[in-house]
Image 1 (cartoon, rainbow, N blue to C red):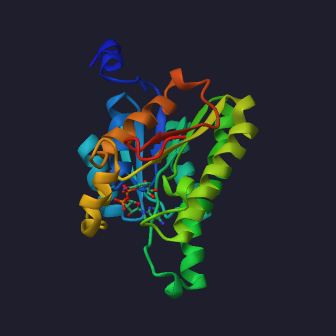
Image 2: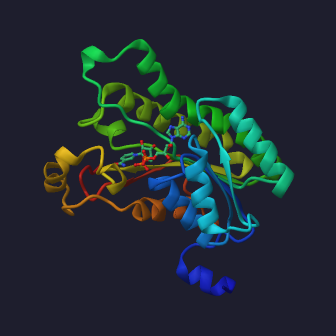
Length: 256
Ligand SMILES: NC(=O)c1ccc[n+]([C@@H]2O[C@H](COP(=O)([O-])OP(=O)(O)OC[C@H]3O[C@@H](n4cnc5c(N)ncnc54)[C@H](O)[C@@H]3O)[C@@H](O)[C@H]2O)c1
């Protein structure tokens, strides 16, 4: 595909190296596909290596432009190992999408301190660790795009989600603004995409599908590709003046 055709098909990520967390399925998979379609070399990471491998092989079975790595976003050394592998292969990292997340709808009386901490680690501390590790090579390069996937729960306190998830996503939104200010002068933009209900959650919300859809002005869940479209703008060169912003992709369910 020529560069011109790629541009017409969406944003161009030619020459860029991107990493997506939690990309073994759902929204992360759609983001990996979007970035790869635009010409990026993509590192598909997930806690579940099998799923990450399936996604990466679907993009490029030869591993020239897409590879899979196991990366548990709760572990700093997993981020460091991923960075070392990326530097060995491609010598830079341009785009990082912190997508991995995990919600638990545990009744409030049953939430243990351990579960609370784990939800914070997966959804919020992960954003800190990722920015901490990947901002260094981006600073050296003078270029970077970091996109954090938050949630409508960060705005409304959570309806179907539990309080630890909503609080963690709120913390991820705050970290987005912190790092955005800190890194803007180094050519690195940090922004968030905040989805409302997405079809990847339909299995988990099967008893609430009709009720939720009726509340959304567009009367349906988003497709993962519709979240990926907003990520693409923020990940592109053309998004360079968007700093510390949150793009809400929720079908009008919440308007600010
Ligand atoms: N689906 C929705 O309705 C919705 C709404 C708002 C926000 N979000 C957010 O969007 C992101 C993606 O959601 P999704 O619907 O695709 O979820 P999903 O459950 O379909 O996929 C999440 C992926 O993250 C991986 N993952 C879980 N824990 C991990 C860890 N510790 N380290 C690395 N990977 C891990 C899982 O293996 C899975 O592949 C999440 O951050 C979620 O909170 C989703």
